[in-house]
Amino acid sequence: MPTDFELHCNVMNFEEYSDAVATHDGRTTPSGRDSSTWTLDSLNLGSATVQYFQEGAPNIYEGVSTGEVIGLYISLPCPTPIHANGILLSKRHILLTRPGEEVSTFNQHICRFVGFSIPVEYFNQASSTIDPALVDRLINGSADLEIERSDWVSITRQLVRIKGAAMSGSLLNHAVARRAAVEGLFSVFADAAISSAARSSARGRRKRPRGEILSRLAEVTRSADYFKYSIVEMAHYVGLPERTFRSVFLELHGITPKRYIILRQICDIHAALEESSPAGRVSDIAASHGVWDWGRMAQRYMKIYGELPSETLKGSGRISGADARH
Image (tube, rainbow, N blue to C red):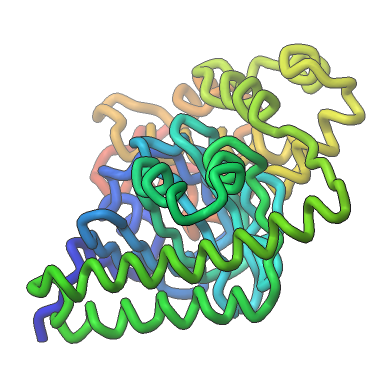
């Protein structure tokens, strides 16, 4: 049966998923073996885009919010929730992202969540019917939005209805239906935001700003020489005491800085092995990514990819005999 999804991806492993969604900005680093399917259904409603995700293994995602849109991320019921920008997404917390903002997520197991984006202009137009101060807070305020459980139920129900209509292929061919879907989604979200703003103002709560920390941290982790930085150097560059830096890093990525570097090295080595020339050697490739203890690296590699580094080369018919033991 035809559906309205512009992208439907349902695969068994991270590599297939990564290839299927290669056009999406950001980098995903696996931190464990696949234990379920990876799914992404993307639906373009014209003035809004909705994406339904299931991630089949532990991983860390790092990217930047692109386009003049406000992005909202909501966790769905699943064995383990997802953390986004240091916030545990739940029935009480959702994440807002704004144009050009850094986004960092991690999960420890299978997780399901929904992301939808609405143009900034849509919010600006809403200021004629919604308190302009609230609109400004949504566009420029803190990333964390604390909501009531009833509001979470209303939002997720609206998203489920939209997905059901898209599955039947009955939504995109009807402009009125598309517009009603977007208006309904914005309406339940606005109701949740208004309630959240009222509670926040009553408590006078102030959130710790994260944008600059995320931005500075991304400059380090996206560097080609990320593995050459010591933890002290990373902390100094980000502008935090070492102990605070370790705590913030754990909050944002779910693992320690040292563990993150190890996973990144293994992920980058895996990509390099798959693209290696016939003369490539495991030891040379590992060394180029700052790894000299090849035996320990091979054990860690095996835990994530289910094969030795040499087998990754052998699978493509490219292996140097001297490396067969790694």
